[in-house]
Length: 279
Ligand SMILES: C[S@@+](CC[C@H](N)C(=O)[O-])C[C@H]1O[C@@H](n2cnc3c(N)ncnc32)[C@H](O)[C@@H]1O
Image (tube, rainbow, N blue to C red; front, top):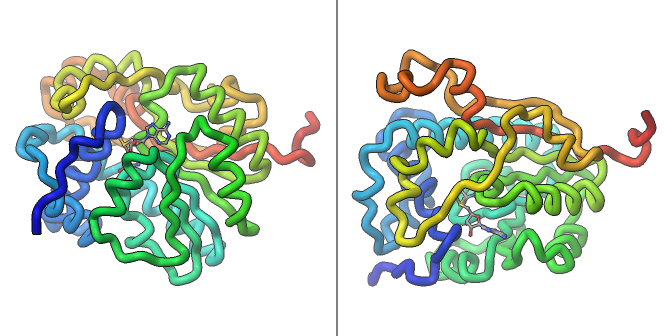
């Protein structure tokens, strides 16, 4: 079969190839953290110069960690809420639905139209509980009614690798939309401290994309998330890198253990419900 060209994946959308690649490396390494046949299938079907992403052990371990943390968190949510709706913002070619499906959940993969069209050409098995929805997260008039239409008593939002490409103003806009429309719901998202991470971007896989993409903004301290919108409540955080001794010596020279924990993390927040609104 002829491989799929990536010409339509431009700007931030091309970045979806980075986590796909490192998840596949992890899956093929057989380290036991997870096996992802669907991701391997996607990877094999795409024509891309994958070799250029070799030699980035740090990024691979950060992506393996964020995959494992989110898998654990989403799995636990599904275990207690077997009929939940999961909304994956900036889904790219994420295959978590296939890894965690319990036969009852509903799952919306939301991404830009070009990405959804690309994904639809990859021969992914269809499932009426697995919805691919084309919209920008800034197009709230399109995606919020879609989520409401599918809403179930328990809903969890996930945003993995999406927010770091947005400015602080754009963060405020998205968090405002979520907090205003989904009180009582929770979100797991990835963020990185720009003061620490920006220094590493020039050597990372991001610098090897065909189009130039930059990290824009993130939370230096996860608890500051409430400054984006007072109806967003910090619940917990999970640093992506935790073993300082495992960092390459050249990275340790530029990073303290505290900076390592702040550099990249998964943050869990709750959108405050009206009844919790009072001081
Ligand atoms: C680094 S990729 C992450 C993909 C996926 N979450 C993963 O971890 O494999 C960032 C994704 O965000 C999507 N994206 C960028 N801007 C977006 C927007 N305004 N609305 C929805 N998705 C967007 C891109 O198309 C891309 O798929």
